[in-house]
Amino acid sequence: MALLAGALVASAAQSRLMVDAALKPGEPWKAYPTRTLDDLPVDIVARTDSGLSRYGGVLARKSGATGFFHPARIEGRWWLVDPEGCLFLHDGVASVHMLGTPGSRSACKEQFGSETNWPARTTALLRAHGFNGLGAWSDVDRLRAVSPPLVYTRTWNFMSSYGKKRGGTYQQPGHTGYPHDCIFVFDPGWEGFCDDYAKSLAAGKDDPWLLECRSTAQR
Image 1 (cartoon, rainbow, N blue to C red):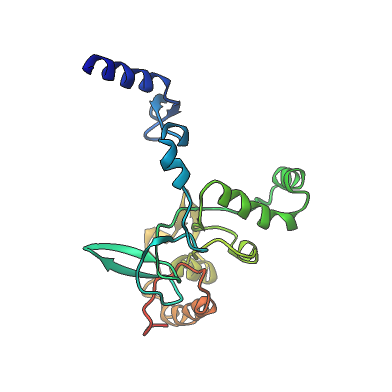
Image 2: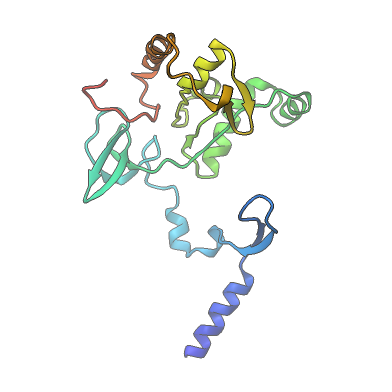
């Protein structure tokens, strides 16, 4: 029986999908085994993305509902809780937006018919693949207009936004560069800019689809 079980495990491993990946940039690509839904038991697959609230939280596991996303410590573990009180795991994709290059615009028109069709069809595509939200650097303004929208986040770059307004910054791979690698925290205008920039946070204070954890007192 042990030999038979071992043979079955080996057979399953041999039939597993292999994908090429590099652990770090510049390292050689190697084939690694991976799993898909086809590798899971049928009963588990049937439960995938089922029993969820409209925000994507788990209906079977609930905490107190506040009408907004908030964190809660439950049985020694921290959870995100959606506006309906359902425990929530943010399964989102970052940088969901249209590119502005001529080739990208042409591909968008070919795929979606027009740019106005892009938000709804992209939202439907993400939901169909099990995603419940948008990550950083996404086109929130367009995608938020879809009904119902995906849960979304916003990125607030205080220092780089101030630097672009002030001048003197430059683009480096993956981040904003500053003169002599020194940020502008001692600039006379820094504090006032932060006060004004922070006021734009209030624009989403009543939006339940915004994943921004706040206490009731702060709201």
